Amino acid sequence: MELLDRYLNAIRFLLPRGKQQDIIDELSGDLQAQVTDKETELGRPLNTAEQEAILKQCGHPLLVAGRYQMPQQLIGQPFYPLYIVALKAVLWVMLPLMLVIETVVALFSAHPAIALVNSVGDAVMSSIYMVGVLTVAFIVLERLQVKLTFLDDWKPRELPKLPVVADSMRIPRGESFGAFLGLAAFSLWWAGVWKFPAIPNVHFLQAIPVGFFWPVLILAVAEMALSLVNLFLPWWTRRRAALRLAIDLGALAMFAALALTWPWFGLQIEATTAGELAKLAPADLARVEQIVNLSMLIALGGAALSYLFRTWQDVRRIMSKPPLGTVLLTWLGFAGAKSRN
Image 1 (cartoon, helix red, strand yellow):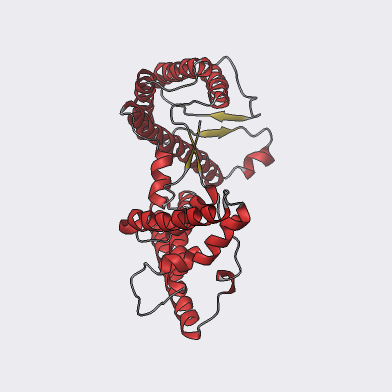
Image 2 (cartoon, rainbow, N blue to C red; image 1 turned 135 degrees about the vertical axis):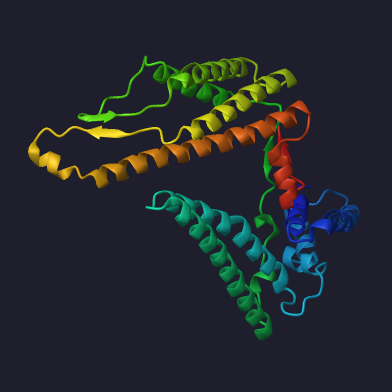
């Protein structure tokens, strides 16, 4: 029953990782027994309202999970499971978000290296501060014995739905079609067939070294051909996963070689009048060049992370292992995720 699975997964998320499966098996067996007894009594399957009544009698997921938590001196029940959820939000959401924002801001500062080190330290210290504030807040709530009314007035049907994991062997046709069009556009631009409108009086003084032209074009065309095959044969095989792995490794090697040649672009802006020439301060032009080059470096880093993730996915497909999405959901506690074929 989906409602029962949603209830058990809500509890699983709040349990200690090493004990999750044993506790869930025990709870599942007990709930199934209650459902079977009720169905035997009524002589028919339970409807949604009757299932909800059984789950409400068992208690809110926070309360149930709290029974299996180790006794705590500072924060007692039922606040401790809620405290754990708040900590996970800080460590899994707030800290990575702050790191990304601080890193982007640091890269566009006058001294990127120093600013980057400082920004990482600031993000970590902010997270520690938030953890401290959360801890004090929950200690105060526990000492004041604040009543959490939502633990009594809750509806099982409003529990989060089970995450849906796509079939790992199935390739969405829309994804293949979009990749084919994007790579085709990039290949035409890279080969010089399709050009962006020029900016008047602005010229690039440097460019990516000529030696990268053919390797980049070959990789783009190879991936475009693979996307075309995937469009008509939309499922992964070990051979196709191995082919994309080779493309991904080639792309990662290309990204590393490109990074060694950074910065890539310099700018020359032609002034048409003496007044415009006076406005073109060398410091301003250098600032523009820095922003352009850092923007390209960030884009390259994002692409490299994407290909690194794909490489991991390809290796797992070759080894016939479950997709990373399923592994991540299991790690987060959603082991009952449904599969979409």
